[in-house]
Image (cartoon, helix red, strand yellow):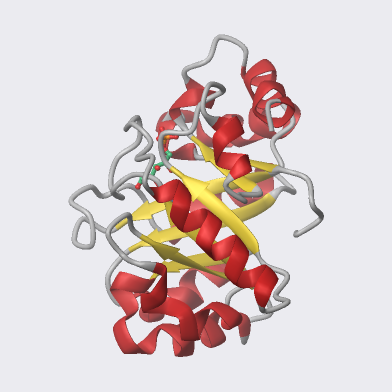
Length: 221
Ligand code: DX5
Ligand code: ZN
């Protein structure tokens, strides 16, 4: 996906869960590049959202890439279900994988789909240096995982910059995604930090005109 321009990945966390098929159809119509699916297990984070069945339910409603963000413990045990449900990319939290992070990334890739690695605000990039080459995308969380509608934590921008510099220094073509608190007002500084995949949930779903906010997010970067 590292085509150089910005990709907009609205999060369905903020969608109407009673009409998720229509929500993803509308996102595609309004110009989204990918669909960010926030899976929360109630253990890694306090909230429970949805599992692989939701991915299977929305799959027939869109051809967009389904970007599954697993905020779950023992994510290795869940990969097969989400692949079977139609996930195109699965991102696991470094904090949930411990020493098995690289192995988990390689396991996701063994299914022929893209793999991502997420790091929470308090996790330094150096903790995952040796696994970075194995992911297709690094997700730098700009909020503490578990809820939508939070404020972007500005100190996480320097981590995105550090990651972009690390990839460039090592000749690695990787996507850098940021997730949490991104709005039309701050998307410019997010992009300037080297982020090329923008997750936005509440900014998109709370807007009166979804297509306009997706255009603005793209144009302001
Ligand atoms: C947090 C979730 C949220 C969501 C985006 O665990 O990952 O960050 O995707 O939420 P907003 O855009 O509403 O902050
Ligand atoms: Zn997310």
